[in-house]
Image (cartoon, rainbow, N blue to C red; front, side, top):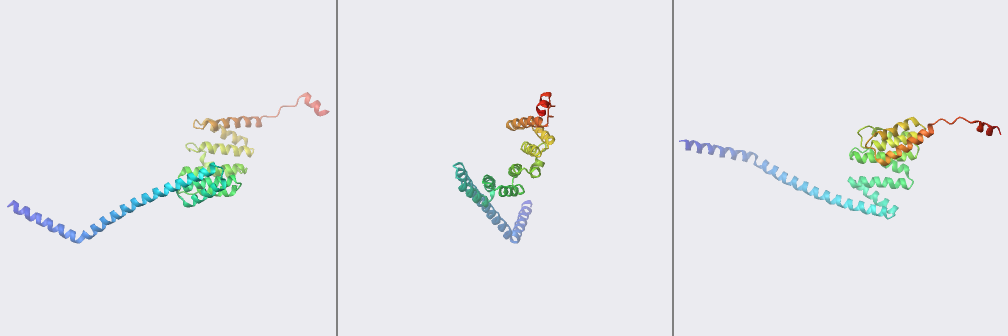
Length: 231
């Protein structure tokens, strides 16, 4: 008797499965096909992206070779062409193109490129910070303290991996502006930070010594000086 019940139960299950398949089988097949298509498309996109990245890398390397060979104009044109393609190498090329503009005397064009990179939230933070630091150097050359502070002021805090570069720039900008107190503070921050690179630490020590000499009171005139002035 139990065998009969089992057979009946299996027949019911088969009938239910058939009904479910009749109702939803087309959808199951459609989903399966969609998964296959999406997977194939994704693999194809990965292959295409890898090919594009390889080509961009080769183009970037060739542009750098042109720059190393002293072919500045050709290198600049190559970097600008790669920059238009976008992507990681495109951003690196845009940084190099901006540096080329600065070297050619187009400081405003370079500054605009650096600022555009720095403000692009879609880019990695480190690349954006590189652009900020390079833009700040241009502002330092233009004796624009406010421009330097605008670009790297927020990077001079503890924990920021770019704080050393930011502090040095802020110290130099303050020194240019005659604000020796703030300049000294910035260079002392560099010396007090164990992670400050050695070369930057040496420059900070030199600047502190220079600032101390500039701030030292003038020596009182001696009798010999007074006699010389009287003559």
